[in-house]
Amino acid sequence: MFGYIRIDRANLLGKEYDAYRGVYCSLCRQLGRDYSIFARFILSYDCTFYALLALDLCEETPCYKMGRCRFNPFKKCPYANSQSKAFSLAAALSVILAYYKLRDNLLDSPWYKRWVYRLLQPFFARWRRKAAKNYPQIDEIVRTMLERQIKAERDPACVLDQAADPTATMLAEMCGLLADEISLRKPLEKERTRRILRSMGYFMGRWIYLVDAADDYRGDKKHHGFNPFLLSGMPEEKALAPYLQATLNHALSEALLSYGLLEKGRFDRIILNVLQSSCVSIQKNIISQLNPDEEQDGEVNEKSL
Amino acid sequence: MKNPYEVLGVSMNATDEEIKTAYKNLAKKYHPDNYTDSPLADLAEEKMKEINEAYDTIKDQRRNGTSGGYAGGASGGYANGAGYGANTTRSSYPDVRQYIMSGRLDDALELLNGVPEGTRNAEWYFLMGMVYSRKGWSDQAYNYFQRAYQMDPGNAEFANAFNAVNNRRTYSNPGYNTGDNMGCSACDICTGMMCANCLCNCCGGGCR
Image (tube, rainbow over the protein chains, first blue to last red):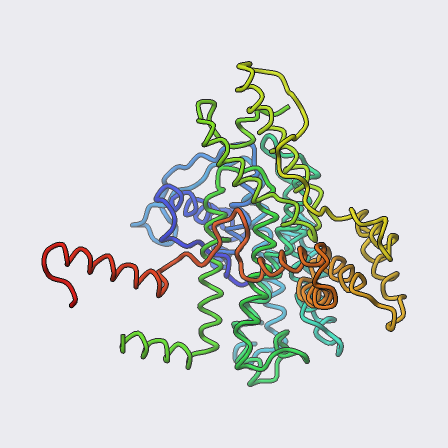
């Protein structure tokens, strides 16, 4: 995944931000415990959100304890104490995704970067093997979906929805998995929760894929890389912004509507902050980068006022 | 049965007005029209039923001065709109609707693709939109819903679906705080300036 699922700190209460930081630091610690101290470098916001969602569904309330950060001994971090599988699932997802991303990068990077990736590959492979042993279903889903992604991109009749489907399905499966692996809080029912999580995951995955594609639009256009917004039938670059906005809004709305059906949990406000505020501003920034001329016009107008 | 006050998210001491507001907000959020083309439509319908029942129970309890018991039936509640599947009897494609309702999307798509191009009516486009929407292929769904609406703008079912999709594409989902409410618009600036001017006038200054 790509680090787009972040929080909007300005719109969070202090205690909510502390809870989020607790999840972030605990996932970092879990990566160190389960894999290696160097595995802590692959910590991502997306997987933090995954752990947060898992903890939100969990029956047991996490307790926080302050501890020293391994990377910065002068800093104290809140660490969540939870017996649930939330962190180990998120850590396994992190290393499995990192491994496949590295393998993907090996195929389409300049030679000097490939050298670095080759040196890193054995470590990533070892972590992935360990994670796959504990959670074979995660490895299977990620591998299958990345294969489907390659196939979809090679299909000459590929449409936007088809290109976004593998990443979306991957996240749908990952979120659906939580209903099986986590002991759910009351009054959540397993089947119902799984359906809601799968739908929410699908549209969050779709949003991540599309927002990443929007972010890479200029680069892909220049280097003739695959991009769903460059497929035939798509608007020209100048008219692309409203289309991007509508498509991304659509995915985000569907994720929000799905999440709305879930009974509120302990991290409801943080999850809503991500969906209603942070993702909106992230997509706005990316779209505005595509239209820098318009932004400049806006600035002139503002000054002239 | 769940505690009706918990369902509406209000305290037992809430006033009638507070309960009504909470009910209205929830009804807006879970109204079946928001979920017609969603794979979770049935769950939204259940939720709506639960809210209607909770509201009715509280109303009855307060009217009769009782503290327990379930009266049942959503009398004055929001009805289930133009619920999907309501048109099965007068549909040109009842089988397709049945497949969609039971989640057999591939079968529905196969049947729809078998319809010759010349005979495809607005309902065909609407049902294609429905299949794609339930699959999560929102872009295709939007195109089909738009076409269905353009071909037959008078049909409430097509108009509802197109309207719901448009709400999602502008991220203005009823019942959610998703509108573009960050920062201030040109109107806000104007209103602010007018207020400031009034205040200045009070002190004898202001724009002339």
